[in-house]
Image 1 (cartoon, rainbow, N blue to C red):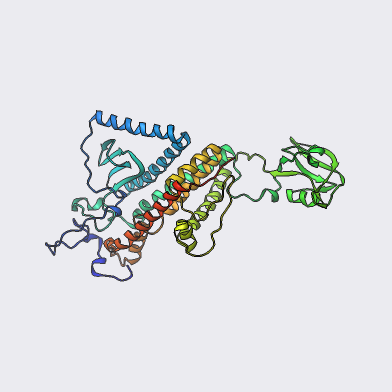
Image 2 (tube, helix red, strand yellow; image 1 turned 135 degrees about the horizontal axis):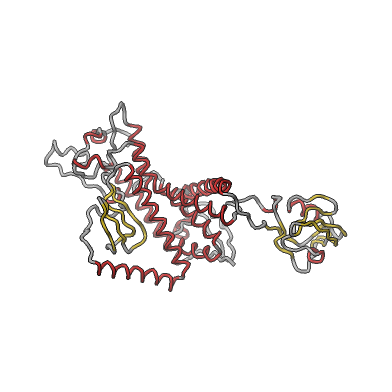
Length: 466
């Protein structure tokens, strides 16, 4: 797209029944057909057999799909089933964003389906057919005329995506990711405003004034003094203590000393007296035997909760963007392919509770997502909601990569056309010239998916939550 070819630049009024081809001047030229990968149906053929289903066949298919979901719950576990339903919900709302903005922009939406494969259930209202299919690994809406390759009846050209102004096309293209981002913010808001949440990557507990004793070691000087979990030491030996680091710094200078501690317990201050212990093997350093924790987070009012939700959203978005960018680096490829290839550099391994370590550059497939989601669901609603919010943000950022068939590819094309348009003359990019790059990108995505799936099956991530 760096140089302009004659067939690359056309004014919008010239887009006719052949979607921009000049077949009227060359009757022997066969009109080009749109690649299924470039339409909003994510690979579904343009023409579907939408013959009406009988009530009996529709009911049977619905029962079979329900039985399949029940089998997942029975054999894989109820938490895996919950995660499957959450993923289906994410896919639905992603496509709902495209559907609503397309209808709002006056575009023709002929189909809105959840899932792939043979139809289980469908009905038509107005110009749109709605339905469900059994393979719940995606969803799609069919928007008329997504690019210059699609053949459209001239009488419906004004209903196409490609005929609409730049801001209308942009609103449709970013709506899927926008829905993911809204869901993430909503989940963070629920955490802050209804459950209480400390936020994403909060400051270290040893550096904040809002702390309490989280554990007391058995047979330690802390136990002998009478310290309990939930206490907060605010003064030791007459010196004020603000953070746990302050307490640790004072204790280490008091080995074997008899001292007085001022402690906040259940909202009241009490005085405790006892002797500070010593570090085993280092009699010159004092040791108390307590560990810090954060007090249970308090629910925030909706306004403050929304503000903190936006902060958390920004943090996770930045980390997601870094993670996706890292996938295309040498370390990222090394983490993806693992023992199959060595692209240079030592791979850092991060430890996980109960596990042998996880490669931070490792790509995770749907199987890995289901495994992680089920583990986090068992750990409690807070951990699970954070995971769902983070997953929504990751999907939203990934979909904005400027490559077809992702939504970001449509954003890039619309923006490029906008920049190339001059003096009211609409420039229309020839998407056909982009197909080789699209197929290379799809091959890369397929490779990532296959390798990630293989590793998640043969070498599953161990994130024991014990």
